[in-house]
Image 1: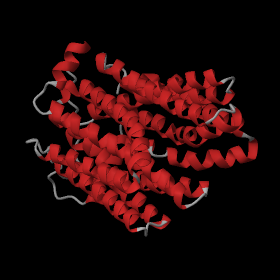
Image 2 (image 1 turned 135 degrees about the vertical axis):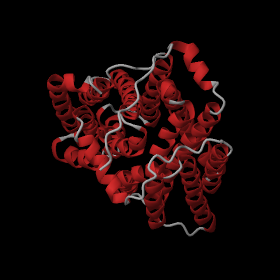
Image 3 (image 1 turned 90 degrees about the horizontal axis):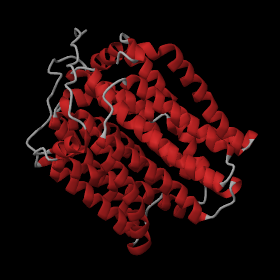
Length: 416
């Protein structure tokens, strides 16, 4: 067992727009941010293209949900091991290999579409491989940001990265619709795959490889156990992780959004699209706000508090008084989700030493991926008790649990 290495203290930053601009102007960060923006956009294009392709192969709603279940479940299962890999090998190399791997998967699907031989099981395999690669790319990409800018500018760098992610998600969604409708599925997959290769090349051109923090020849399983033991022995980290586990309920919004649009609110496809767009506006607006004033204190409380805000949003959504009410709650959910994203990625990285960052952050991503369970569970519950009651329960349960966690654990969380 490795002895404890205290995490470096957090030097004060000047804050505000000037500090954010200064961070962006660092020699290599702008290049990294651009490559990440391209990656986020291509991820969104590939994801939406996959969903549309499934609907063209089968009318089954369960088949569409199962693709997401396979990818999310695979990523959740592999993430802890992926954290060990990130701590053992150069992060730049892992990012490049991950992006090239996903580009290869996309090009294979493009070829299958072009040849007319694409089948549903091909997409399940693509989702499985994509989940594995994504589980490595997520912690590698986020921890490499700190390697490039240094710990003093972690808050601004992560916030800027989140802004790029939000912009990529919104732009990628619109781009996917234009590409699929305008030039077809094969070309869409090809263009998105080419974009990932461009993103990989931008990282290759960077001189920073990312430190290999773990140089001891211990086994990967020993490293994995050490990571779990490190978190378990530190109550602030453990309580923050417990709060993150409530992401199990967050996945409910994905399948219930179209259900509420069609069956509860009685609106059409255009209004359904606006619901998703407003959620994206919330994530982007919060990313900008955090970029201008990143959180630096009480990050443990903020991690659990923002998860509580998201749970409250699910509960509010279940009332569905009107379409305007749903739009307001979508904006709330987007803001709360982005606040949790930045607080978790920043807080856990600053709270642990260099050699633990990959493993600890992978645990966070594993918990975040638990939403794939909620995707299926809320649908089954809605069939049994009704749409509004089902979503209400998925909001009320984490609201109660997170309120208790904050009430009795805020002093411990404050030490994170």
